[in-house]
Image 1 (cartoon, rainbow, N blue to C red):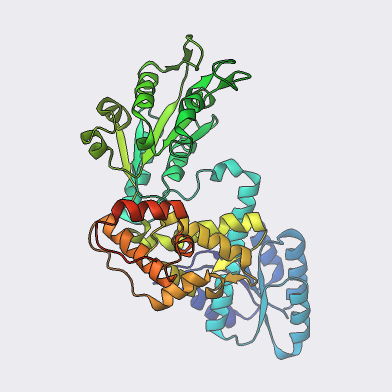
Image 2 (tube, rainbow, N blue to C red; image 1 turned 60 degrees about the vertical axis):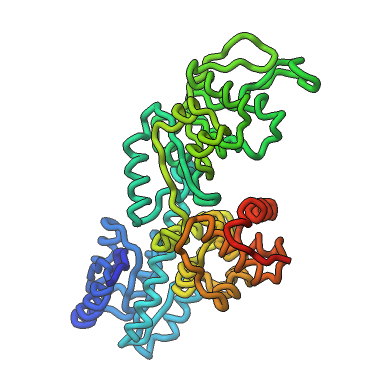
Length: 455
């Protein structure tokens, strides 16, 4: 199945040559436009959005080099591929030095031409999207949240569309690294609150004794070191959205105060008895089973029902491998903007990434792509740009059995990583895309699932 997209303009005064090339490219999925002279081609460039041009060099009237001069001045982002006879190779080579994308001797090697054209169109589309990001960064702040054609991701996207302007609380479930915060951002930036703040608060990253002051704020002199008033995260999120990440980590006493904030829509700063009205959309996320936490007395039942109005469950990346090419494209685009590069991922890279288990989920994939973009020296990402451990694991380790519970699958991945790294936990954690602390926690919490040998 041909899935190329893009609009290609073919310019050649020989109708048969144009007809053949048009048929070849149309069969690859391109939308092909034809012109037999430069003046008509220039007119078409004015009226249509062209992604690549393939032009003959010698033509009656204005020739291909004059057309190239026009394109260089007026459509510099459109890649140009020349078709040339042997007698005009020198001029084609000169055009390459001036910025043309490539050239081919007539009749062209069609498979090679198709390959070069694919790369040209991809780079043009990537450049256009990068320019859009630079001009309007807020349009892409949500990130690659619901990118995917798997049924689970389509359902998440459809649900976000239905609830985006609701005031109801949202609970996002999923393993570490699946992109829960990105989905929360998507919900916010697609809603009518998009112009107001999005405030993310990681309940597990702040020392427990500081959680209340961070969430609710404090007055000057409320405690030792409180030299001035400080508003909390709920007040910061006024008019917008607040995300409480890993809400299951909150202590019971804080849960009670949080419940009151949700019921009354007001906060009291520490050291004050005067309530402050707050307007916010609440989104919470967790990698725990909150219902089980309620049953075991670690999470308030009334708070659970308050936050669990709409629930979104994010599948792990190993269960949505068909979405990996789309995610890779988004991450490559993101890091190309930062690194000022123009890159695409090769087919070999996509295949290698799809074959991986991804215990660190989307976060691990993003880290791998960031490293690859930074280190890449060519115009596309290759297998050599992937981390050494990743390439080694892909080449030498069979895919772990994905059957069983999520914990069992995760532990198999951890065991394989530890074996691959000769028991070095730091290297294993880096390979998995998780922190060393997280690796130790999983080993300590879940070692009973099945015995594991670690060094």
